[in-house]
Length: 332
Image (cartoon, rainbow, N blue to C red; front, side, top):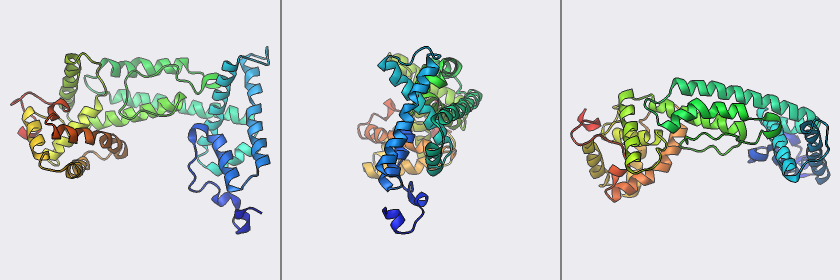
């Protein structure tokens, strides 16, 4: 009798509570955790794993249209990854680890594979909606990479993506990078990318479009001067928005003058690094609340760079701003 049964609990009540499931190998992770909890024994673990991996023959048969029972090792591994990706997509879509495990136990691999394809088509539909929302909230004066990502890259991905035999692949990767990079693969990665991009676009849309356009133009010009590629456009706006809130709490600006930057540097330099972080995070809390968790993760990655720039009097190299006496947050 295992420990769960010994204390009179239903096995399905505690099996996945507090467990960190690996979503990149969801089905196998569920099996592993079920074994560790004592819900299934080693024999059933082996049986379930065999059930999953034996399904590869079905995929190979479909891929070769019944003309061959074997493919190269490289192609077999590729098909296995796509097949597992489909199964995981279906199980994850159930949004309940115990329900997913029961499906894994009770349903055939053909059913799981086919339902995975259905789940991934829903994700593709979500991507279409997200792309539309991103285009609707496009940044004014966006960089070439930004515009090509919206206008070309996502559509190219959709055309090249193969749910049945290449679900885990990213045939096209957007050239423009979001502040936080998605860690998934396949269409799930694209959905996360578009979700991140929308959070960034909506943040920038909270501010005056002329101010946003000016900051972006400054970043483009700075990249040209440094003979480098234009990077993410939201991060500079986020930095400027926080400094504006530090200088003028509650006033919704994103555009700084050179004098603003000099004033901010002098004021922040009065604090220790820990105090400076506290002050900057307090300024951050006055930013728009939508997608707050995303913006917080990004700014937490940026705050140490701001502190370092203040310490070494190089804040002007980190912020976009207008030339001296041209206006800005502190002068408005």
